[in-house]
Image (cartoon, rainbow, N blue to C red):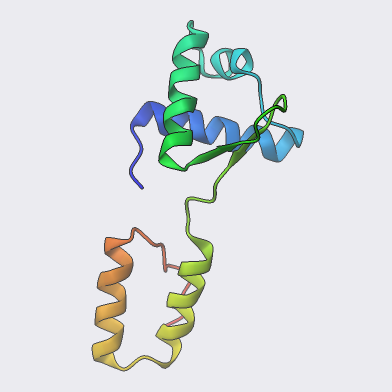
Length: 110
């Protein structure tokens, strides 16, 4: 999933805030944290991130945003496991597929 620079900034801010505060930030906190003057632009970015699947919203609850793992950890783990036993030809195909899917296989021991 490709995000615009602003969407990535908003996503990263929310994800980091969730890690440190165990709840999502308010739109005003996002705006203040990123130096944005418009809360409505934050709302628009968040709506777009929800539509893209990068954020989840729990309806009816305050501070209910959840950041979706954009690193595809389950898929990456499967690729890494398969690479351990892959032939050279299979490895080449898996590495090309991982590149297309934008998976980071860097932790894979060669």
